[in-house]
Amino acid sequence: MNTPFDWNLVRSFLAALDHGSLLGAARVLGASQPTLGRHIEALEAQLGAVLFERTGRGLVPTATALRLAESARQMESGAEQLARQLASADADETGTVRISASQPLACFLLPAVLSQMRLALPQVQVELVASDAVSNLLRRDADIALRMVPPEQASLVARRIGKVTLGAYAHRDYLARHGKPRELADLLQHDVIAGDRNEDVLFGYRQSGLTVGKEAFSLRSDDLVVQWQAVRAGLGVGFIADFVAATDANVLPVLPLLKIPPIPMWLVVHREIRSNRRIRAVYDFLARSVPRAL
Image (tube, rainbow, N blue to C red; front, side):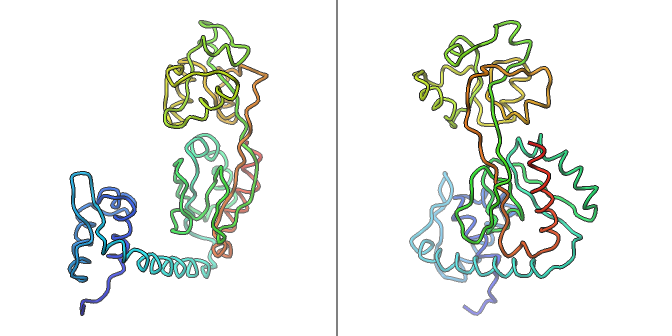
C-alpha cells in the first residue's frame, strides 16, 4: 500500500461503523454523505478488502472491518490525546468554548447565565450544543458538559454543582376546566403529559401502587421542551423542572405532597483541557453561576 495514509479515512470508517449508515456518520462528522462514501471506498481500495456490505437498512460491517476496528480506535485515541495536549498548550483566553447541555438547560437556564458570562468574559465565544444525548468529551463533542449523570471515564473531571428539583404542574386554564388534583391517584381522572420511550413517570406511578399503561397519558413525548410547551398550552398535568416552571407565572404547582427525587447536576471537563485558560475560565464561571440559577 504505497498511497499516503489519510487519517480522515479512518475517522470516516469509525463513524460509519458506530452509526451504521453513511447518513448518520456524515451528520456526526459534519461532512456530506457522498464524501463519506468516497472515504470508505478509498480505504477499501487501499486495504484491498470490503469493509461494509451495503444493504437497504444501512451498512453491515464485514469480518475484516470488525478486525480493524480495535486498531483504528487506538489510532483515534492517540489523535484525540494529541489534540487535547495541543489545546491545553493554548494560553490565550480568546476563542470558542463548546458547551453541551440538555434541551431544558440550554433553552431555559443557560441563556441568562451566558448573558452574564458575556459581560465577564467578552473575549470568549460559545458553541452551545442542546441535546439530551450524553456528549463524548473524549472525542471533543464538547469542551464542557452539563450532565445529569457522572462520567465513568477516569480521564474526565466531574464536579457536582447542584441539583434539579421537579414537580407536577398545570396551566391555570387547565385547572379552571378540570379542577386541581390533590394526590397522585387523582391524576387517573386527568390529562397527563409524560414520556413515550422514557418510562420514568410510568415507573413512578407503579412505585406508588398505580398499575397503568402508557394509555393513561393523553400526550406522550420524549422531548422535554415539547412536554413543557404542552403544559403551557393547557393540555394537561406535566412533571417539570422547577427552574423551567418558574419562567411562566400562569403555570401552577399541583400535588404539593408529591416528592420527586431531585436530579444531581454535574459539570464535566477533560482533565487535560482544564489547563487551557479559556476553558478553565468558562468552567469556573459556570460552576459559580449555574447553581444560583437553579
